[in-house]
Length: 46
Image 1 (tube, one colour):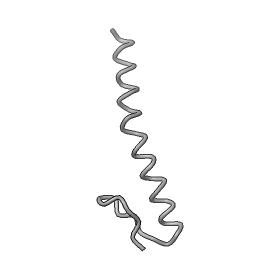
Image 2: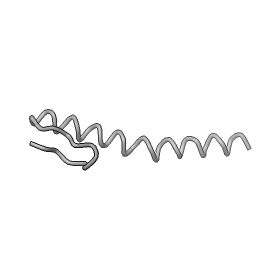
Image 3: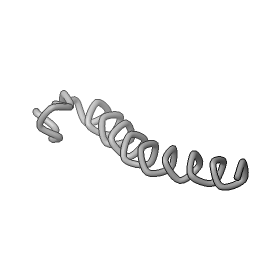
């Protein structure tokens, strides 16, 4: 049962961490181009 809980926790973390990391990468790219990343809208404002 504990193994199942660990597997569920890992899947849960991956599902939430991957989009967050992807968003952070886009924000860094936007800043490098001289723009401002709008998190609520998900786009780069120049």
